[in-house]
Image (cartoon, rainbow, N blue to C red; front, top):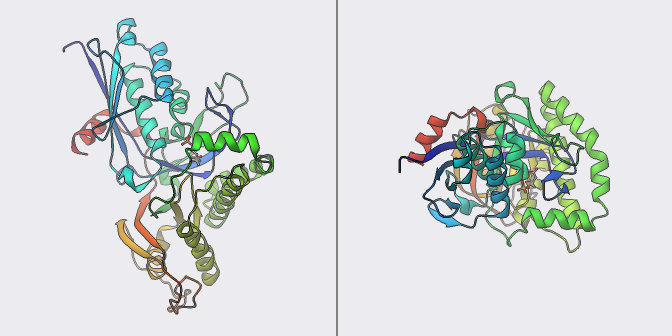
Length: 380
Ligand code: PMV
């Protein structure tokens, strides 16, 4: 019909270095702590979304990669909040919307797609309603982590203190160009089905006696990460990320009943990183793992080639995607180093890494022009 509006958005997933875990208000999606993330490159991984509003639609409707999906309460909260703010007049605010979403990365790979998915959802519907104010709030209602994908490079989401959540917003800490970090996503495949983060974090808040200890050490850790980003201090950023990831999974193990996300393969990658750093006499890699078994490695560009080579010696890697970079001087790692603790004998079973995705940091959803998102939507 002539009487319809259409809008597009694209967003890349973000990876938290200091994790969000636990809500102070679950209806408004207000977190207990600040979190800091890096936004990954939308060239390698992105969600693109087309939102249409028409007086002819009978219901709100959402599809992912061509298949209808449930319109969740979270999605309804995003739609409701944007209907209230709609700048295109009351008619459009009362129309139903259709949201079609495409992920350029395999959803089957088990990569956390909620940050890019709900961010693109929020931005597309906000463009439809012609209201780009309060986008942090809107994206946050879809999925907490989504508000960080609005921004390029390094982002921090403040917990805020107000009960209405107006001070719980995300903002950019540093641009992607400020520091050329690389993220090596180790997709280890699906383990046992992971507990959804919403339920798991609610159970942590209700039962874990370690959570208060985590929260009390976070202000110092957040300050150290801000400082590491400002000063491009890789060793410090990597160490803080590793410690925070370990802390998150410890708190998950302390949840009752416990929440387990890491598998033997995840733990093998974590141990590999510590052995590589030890053998190299410096911090070559950091790691961090979210609410699932995949482990993301942090590296400086000059070390990507070396890290990938060492990973290939220690793991059975399915495919490598992305820019491996140039071979650099790796003389500090013994040539017979197998990284599996076997001293190069290859005595232990090699764990499988389905894919190794090598990403740069990239643009925020707000930086990706609507016309570009539309073109991606047609090609993805
Ligand atoms: O935004 P959610 O509800 O998918 O929760 C994300 C939780 C973690 O990914 C584990 C941590 C984070 O800060 O992204």
